[in-house]
Length: 179
Image 1 (cartoon, rainbow, N blue to C red):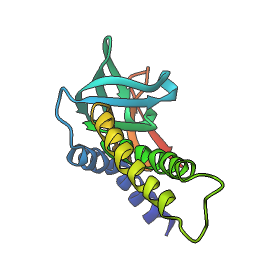
Image 2 (tube, rainbow, N blue to C red):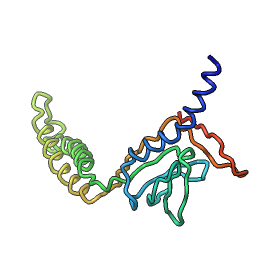
Image 3 (tube, one colour):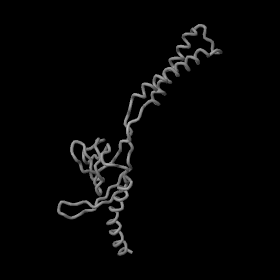
Image 4 (cartoon, rainbow, N blue to C red):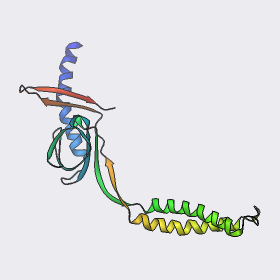
């Protein structure tokens, strides 16, 4: 049993880097020139904005101020810019909420504090609806001019096995596990 395991295990480990690399190259929906954000603490990169250049084997090539070669084993987070989006929905929600509160208070005050009867909440409800409509529209208009970046995280393999060149000219086996 041990002799069989001693033959099969090295063979599996020898081909694992190639299958892992092929799977990563096919699953990365990237084109050269796309904006990316790379986190690799070992390389002192924390949300480093860069431009994707290539994926060469188990090395990610990006350009920021200069060309950087990042071993995939060192990358803990990799995100791709999906463009900018408008924040009109957020503006609508915030504006409607603020407007409803303000309009409800205004309806209560306009009706008169002494004359208010809980049996007739119409002025408060009407003020809240009017305030929500006006301020919601204003908030949506303001939010339409506010643009934010959308980032999509590209999932990296949880377990990577790869061959790493050593200084003495030989190759070593690198194993990394991401939690």
